[in-house]
Length: 329
Length: 268
Image (cartoon, rainbow over all chains, first blue to last red; front, side, top):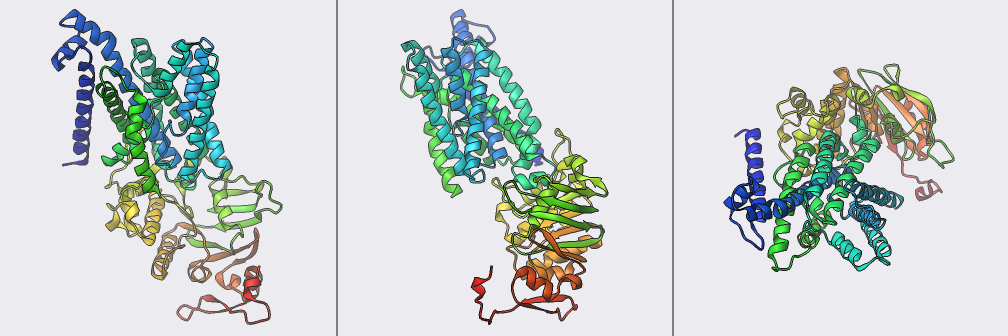
């Protein structure tokens, strides 16, 4: 069997699994539906109540989860490659925390527009990644993945503190909202949010795929990248900005969902993918499936209560992180 | 082909220049070797060629054209550099790693070269690592890894090969095999510019040697010109004798045990 055929079979299989999980996520809820009813309702056929439930509540929720996972998976794959760091991901680098500060600050100032919120997040995310990289460089440790992670965790802690300060005088409702941000959720999904997140994920994803060849080269290190004609400083700056944009958009839409960007690229690599173009594309697909599955678990675990989405991904991600850390040392 | 013309490089906040008015030429068809003690500025020259360090003055030219004016990609199409150290965080199959050498020739949307790509296959052959093509880079010995890196540089398809300490960590057989390979590539017409600690090996293989000392050129010329006891003793600050390699008569250096009143451990 040729490599191309094997790859297309593999990815068709993965896409099928993601589709099945997504349909299961739409089918499960207070009113359980079967798969056929789900498909019919999406097409607008069948019982009008079912159509309403699926089209206004469950479908946007599932699509939002898919987009959040795709964005975080791609951002993680790009960051790991460009930083040569198997532990890099938006949440652990403090990028998501910075984005949350931006979002909370925007909300505190009363700016909750569909385009203002992601941009405020983006500003916070960009600042956070810049600070994390500068702190790591100042301690001479860009080369040591653990030092960069430490810098990121510190930036994340600072972001948490900043959110607390911003909220110290806020009404209870705002605090509840902010807590929702810090734990991650796709529960309040609506088509408007899905719409603008889709734009950001498509744009960020296309840009990362454009830079994918450069990421292959950056993963060899600064000197080898220079030897192959890549301006490492300039390329990595662009890649960090795009990854920050993707993470910021997901945070503005669904809050802090950690560890997806860490776990997903490793899963895709374990399927034999090495080059960053297929890796980023695969990470979008696997990330999408993972977050939909995590949201399903969040709803299935202790019904009728819902676990925070970020808690579910952390429960999965922390053991995985420890495993990677052990491999590293 | 590669010319350093009165190059001065000063690190920020450093009092002395790391490279002080260095002129050297690496022509096609020859092995040109830069040698010198630790900290003499050898690797700084390579980093400057990679444009990771700005020149304070002077210029580096590629076939007469100013390096600073050339596109990075264009330079990478013509000059391949094997940096001193490289480790992969995410291992690759050897052939895929070698195929990355084609990067300067590819557009951003080009398909990655396959295992059977002619340039990749020929690079694997020339570096004599065809048998390793499907191994993973994290399963290679030090000597194999160095050869794989050279294969990647050959896949770049340029006319010049620059190497920074290519034989560090290699045993005698691998070291010799590496130098034989470089000599053969030069014989085939490439410009080979080499930074090395291995004076005796360099003296047997290089056409021209440049001895650096604290950023200056202390001596330059044929191995016989440079490998003189008086010059080497003052540069390395260690007593030594220069004898002859019994096989081909190349000069060979033999550092002496210091039996004088000064303990060797007091040497600077």
